[in-house]
Image (cartoon, rainbow, N blue to C red):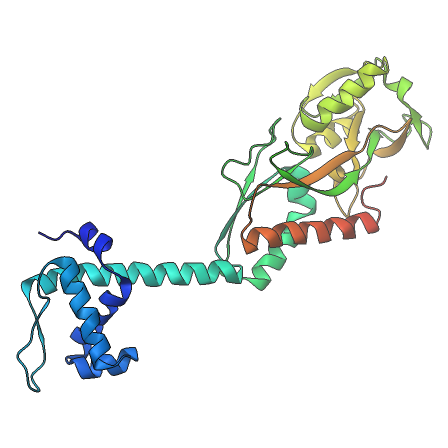
Length: 305
């Protein structure tokens, strides 16, 4: 018996299209006209298919009577229409891919989700209403691009990863109004001070390592991954906090807290778009739109206190 997978291996799609057209039109002449072939070319397509499957696919009664499928022909036609359907779906998917539709998987974290991605998603949806955007938010310590097209991260990737720097975000000190005089605060004031902090990974870990290298050891009384919770606890008087400016919200700044620049300044948090290898057109647009949005935030002073 000729199985579906055997048929896949031994014939070409043009042979299947010939078979399907003849059955649909009833005669070789009409099928040839539909496909744009001469009748002899169409006959050659059928002959090649019959050689591949090892038997006749049509009974040819001759004259004006329509051709009839043989039992083998009926089997081949069923598999052929399945294959032609898959081929059409593939062609349509490839066309959508090149047009910028399809699916894109994006890894993100709070600041990017809040500040950059709303504009990116809105513009992608406007340009490609049928696109499938999948977002995954993960406050991970190491970048993992395994199942992602684009990953936003606060460090550059390894040598096999393409890292596009989007923006540099200044660190500031959050305190209650009146806790400190207006203006800059020296880093030495943080030594022993009660602090509310993000988890000690990624940028936060680098901040704490930098302070430690300067002999500054804050007393962390609470850690949370929620930026709003940090602000709330500072406002409540639990402690101060060192935060990147954009993590406090954009374009609005939090109410009920005072922002102070630090002296000397801590190294800025850098936000990158990480990718690997050849990108789909949709993934390329995600990176380009994120870079454009980041430039607008930077130009508007969003990364400075």
